[in-house]
Amino acid sequence: MQNPKSAIRIPKSEVPPTCPPFPLCSGLRSSEMAQPATLVVDIETVGQDPELIPARAREILLDVENEEDRRRVLENLALDPCTGRIICIGVHWVELDRSRVYCQSDERELLANFWSDIGQIRPQRFVTFNGKSFDFPYINIRSAIMGVPVPRDVQLDTRRYSTERHFDVREVLVNYDRYRKGTLEFFCEIFGVPSPKNGINGRTVGDYFKAGQLEQIAQYCLADCRATSELYLKLRNYYR
Image (cartoon, rainbow, N blue to C red; front, side, top):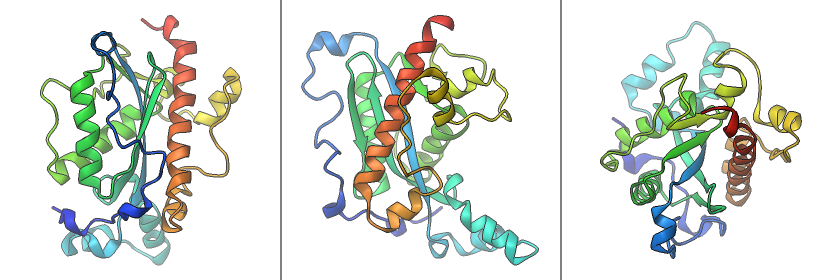
């Protein structure tokens, strides 16, 4: 298990101003809290410093045939929750049109605050774009590695062929064919939804992070949430 204290940290002075200093449910009336909640979730990840990966695990990871394979492994660290880490979680509450981006100074705090809000809201449905294959397994595994407890009776559903508890917009739009191409930007263009991609994408998040451009990452994450929400609103009445 990775030492949580060794994880890449965001200095507190660099926490983006877009990260509200209050929970997503702060200030809501009891009547608002009582209504069914649909939450759109999106995460941004970066690769860990290879030197922070336990020595034996790093040795296994880099046991490849040539330098090109080694380079490819290092480039893709962010895609695996065992070798990457979460730097941002964006959440958009559809019914209330209310958003929050979690960007605390360390990953454990980020995850703990995310789960705290989820535990209070207890959403009826989650909405993601490719969340069943990527975002939710990543959150679950990173939470387990960091030892972050999850609320009782709250589950990030990753079952395929179901939209009741978790509506994965990409899964629906590709008809459950995980190998079929189709990015968020592509589907936004098809459905006439403003594209959230403005110079930053999943492949360049790491570069923005290294440059300390956390505000841009936070805005990008929330833009993805809102675009996913708009696609969901166009689709939800066709999938019961």
